[in-house]
Amino acid sequence: MRLTDRPTWKALDAHSRDMGDARILDLFAQDPQRAQAFSIEACGILLDYSKNPISAETRRLLVALAEDAGVPAQIAAQFEGRRINVTEKRAVLHTALRNRSQRPVLVDGQDVMPGVRAVLERMRGMAERIRGGIARGCTGRTFTDIVNIGIGGSDLGPLMVTTALRPYGSPGLRAHFVSNVDGAHLAATLDGLDPQTTLFIVSSKTFTTQETLTNAYSAREWLLTKLAAFASAEVLVEHHFAAVSTNLEATAAFGIIPERVFGFWDWVGGRYSLWSAIGLPIALAIGFERFEELLAGAFEMDEHFRNTPLYRNLPAMAALVGVWHIDFLGHPTQAVLPYAQDLLHFPAFLQQLDMESNGKSVDRSGAATNYPTGPVIWGAPGTNGQHAFFQHLHQGTQVTPADFIVAVNAAENMPGHHDMLLANCIAQSEALLRGKSADEVRIELKARGMQGEELDRLTPHRVFPGNRPSNTIILQRLDPRSLGALIALYEHKVFVQGAIWNVNSFDQWGVELGKQLAGGVLEDLKAGRPGSGHDPSTQRLIAYVLKNRETGSS
Ligand code: F6P
Image (cartoon, helix red, strand yellow):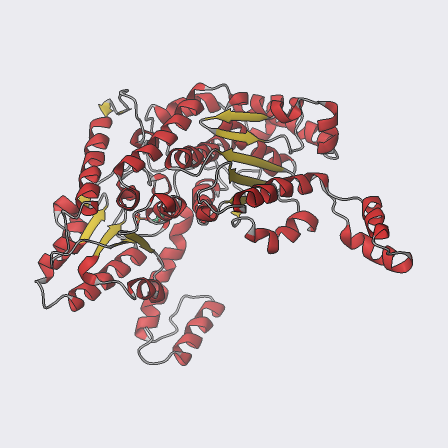
């Protein structure tokens, strides 16, 4: 039966019409316990979802939908290593990478945990040798800079985490990330780096990704040119390059020695890979013990997720609130607003996690979905966003559900700053909820001496509709453990939504066509011809570039 024909879906659909005009403030007035009743605390994280147009009945119906869609069984299937990535026939076991228990995790009857532990031990060894100055560059100097070359999941996870855990980094070892094939990214990163003390990590699950290989070969060229006087190309690559990949043939062809290659498995999706050796830059930047704390935080959330009934389950409820907004209230976007400058890259990380996972329009059987799936994820850290796009959140014509994320305790000892940050975060969700009526505006303006026509003219501009939904997610502190739990929370949220929508959240065929066509356009650009077989606009764009580009700008 189609999802939309199920009685549980239809019940929500009918209920959404009753709730359509509900004022969230009225729901608070009806239930003095609402703030607690619509909050969940787990793994040191508080999720307050009370500022959404959700009643106890809405929650009951949402949980019924999730049960009807088989979410509990699908959670079990994921943790049990079933091949739930149906289009690629793969298990989905990023949770095994952070399994801190002694429980085996089986794929086709084989326990994957000994392999996971072995790679973790090798990562520990590498982190200790580099951070301890035992493994050095080819001229004997200790490494001061690591450059991770990767894109998508082989970039965003380690970049986001390394930035988020900046206070835990060591000043003597800076981490840099190069992803874009735009030569400006690599050039700007290399500018000022000393090749004698720079270690490159080429991170690519497939080791075929065009951007990563182009950047890696250019970085290799830079190194070999700069250090030609000191050693042979072979020795230079041996000392200054490591790789994280499942493609050992390709890493060997690049010249990276097997001791410096860290493997992982086809059951680790790119966007879920920061817990694997893809996290090597994290372990180098913050130390292996801290990396293990990150894993432990995620494991704690995994345990909560798989063992807690849906209505008290933090990721599941976050997912259900999202389904309510997307499918029943018609809000297709989701703002993510971390009130933490160090979470600068969190929205971009979540864009890949959520939009690459659930940006699908056919279900697992290949049938077109007749309901909206993955939301558009966007956002930026507060308080900066307040002075940019918050205008739209408060007074725009579209309603955008928002996730506010903040830590109780400051990352830095800067007196006065953190209370201000917290106050802004909390006040923004209050403002979105409460709004300001025309009467309130008029009273305010009159108190300032305004009257008559001017008062009438300005009033509508100063009205806030309010009743705008948000979640608030509070951590104790932005440390490795709570960050691990926070990331796992969103991973599982995406999982539950994908399970309800019956999409395969673990493939990403949608990125292929552009890659494929880029190959043809590249050939045309190289050959200096507008090409054939393109649509007229594409052909004209190629011709325009060819006509206007300067010699040497390829
Ligand atoms: O193009 C999308 C994608 O396949 C992502 O899913 C992945 O994270 C990224 O490219 C990088 O892939 P790789 O690690 O194989 O270089």
